Image 1 (cartoon, rainbow, N blue to C red):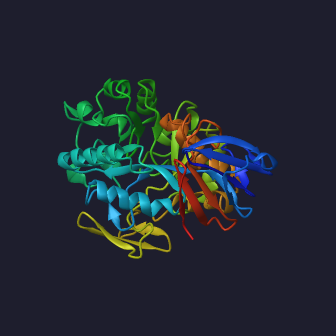
Image 2: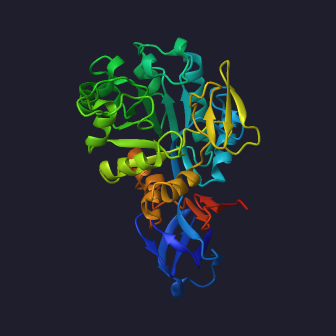
Image 3: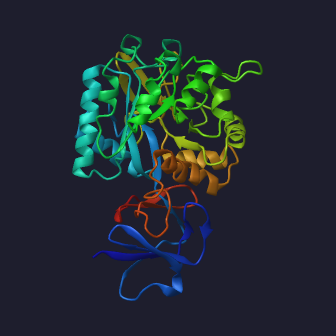
Length: 382
């Protein structure tokens, strides 16, 4: 049996902050949140040094990290490298993400994530397939020659992952009526993204069970006063979640503030859309034949087109607090509890409460992650 307590922390349990409370962990699970004076005798204790102890951060859109792009090497070793690169920045659960690619790459990525799950790679909770069923008009850096209609056997392919979560980003206007409902019936999470759809297209997709929106504002039809577009549907519908890239480049901080105020509370979640540059010394990489360079945190092609991000999750939290004037508690919820709820995993992760998995991070007032735990197993980062 492994049992320990963390004390002298400003504890954020997923909803509220606590002082003078200790978190007790037993065999990888949160056993108790109790007054420091009641820490059981005879167990190991960890002094948090008055840092913030919070639920581990959850990222549902991670293309790469540590110099690795999942599309380039869709295998379990690449997934481990991506996971390790993001762990130092507070991400304790993620969906490795494959952007639009060949059928063979999709099959390989799904198989690699399944292997990672079977091997118990810490922090992998499923896969995000961003494409290929997108709209070329809003493709961004997705390769146009691989964007295609949904195949007859696509639902079988997309539902192949066992005992985990599969998220599919697609353009609803290019999908046959009823197809989204079939995906949802198989337990697949569906988000609209890289879409030129009209408001009516999106509301029809929501009616079929579509659950969310990939990188709100980016690669989608905008909100105007006579045509609400995808953004208008996303902000006005209370049933759906929105992913938001809070790097200061994809969305202006003032728009982040407006969007968080407009969207139903609990439905806005932070994502990174991270590329291989996160956690890597080399800030250049290739996406197909295109060279992408990260300069001062901005990931783009030579012509300036944004191409994913050089963002990590703890920086996204910091940016929400510092740039968009969002309270730290809400920013942390956007990075942990709300994505856990989107994934249907909030009974396991996203909170520091008894019965939940001991996925935790410790960070200082400069938003530097100093320690993290996944299922109670600790890593020291500084």
